[in-house]
Amino acid sequence: MLRDLLGLLYPRTCCSCDKALIRSENYICTYCRYHLPRTNYHLHAENPIHKLFWGRVPVDAAAAYLFFKKGGRVQHLLHSLKYGGMKELGELLGQLYGKELKASPEFSSIDCIVPVPLHPSKEKRRGFNQSQVFSEGLSNSMEKPLVLQNLNRTTQTSTQTRKARFARWQNVKEVFAVQDPSAFENKKVLLVDDVVTTGATLEACTRALRSSSGCGVSIATIAAAL
Ligand SMILES: [Zn+2]
Image 1 (cartoon, protein in one colour):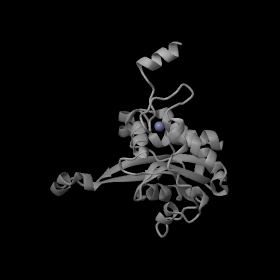
Image 2: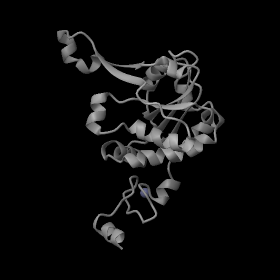
Image 3: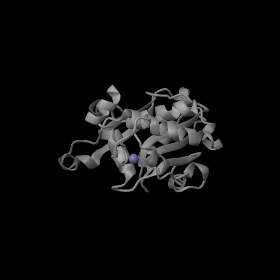
Image 4: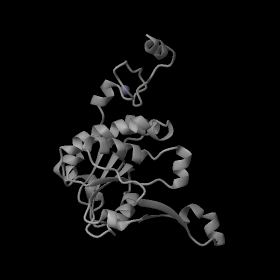
């Protein structure tokens, strides 16, 4: 009764459509859960995400859970996750997608899961890394270990010339490095990010991971905005 009363005072709403949730629903209403715009890319080896990396860096398999459309429900979901502090929503999405990936031979044969790291100052500001919480959900349902703090992000700022100061945003380069390469030797790593757009970040991370000998990389993201 208390729960229903609290529900009247502070209605829990769907992170996708904003309608009030019923008691058995969490974060996403049943309607939205059934109607999530799934890509099903994990069922097709030659999908647009995998093709994005062709000629750039070798990737074993790549897929995204949902289609991202500007102003659409998936953007709303990602916004709730990133800026609304809805960590549990990220875990839920990871759990749902993990169940689907588990059924795909390319993805079920991975050894570990590595989220794309946020810059430490950004993570401190936001309180968590959205790719990591999604990875935690994947790790749960795929029953594969999560490896944190071995792939690191640093920022390299070019020499502070006068010009560089004015165009500083152009001169800041994100660099990824693996701290202990032996941990990824001969391992199949599932690299995880929130949204894939140009693939530049994932490409840089894949290069860093592949510096470990025999390391193969597959990619999974929450959404694709190609
Ligand atoms: Zn909904």
